Image 1 (tube, rainbow, N blue to C red):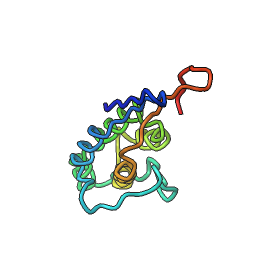
Image 2: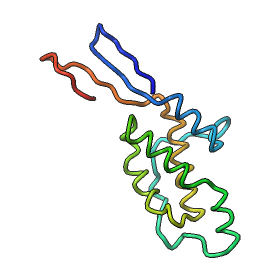
Image 3: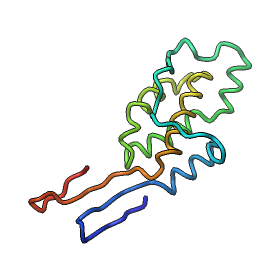
Length: 134
């Protein structure tokens, strides 16, 4: 976790930039892959029915590291990225039997992170000198 403090303005910011860069590298979402502007696009219709039905699909999903990717996103969501909460909620529902469509949704969230890697929490004093989160 990266912590930046600006005493003059009374702000403290928390980010997970280093951690998220490692996550993106681990799941090959770096280089020329284009980022996206929303955590999860409306065209993803995630349902249990898109879970694997053939042996080949199950083998592919076994190699996809779906649970590891979702866990990495959950960690970031809990500590510094509340903007991921709805998307992580959607993709985590299919941890027991994910399909290719579910994996595509996880990759979409990772592409969102690529474009918003500097986003985090900022705490600043209000006019009364109390801390508040913005």
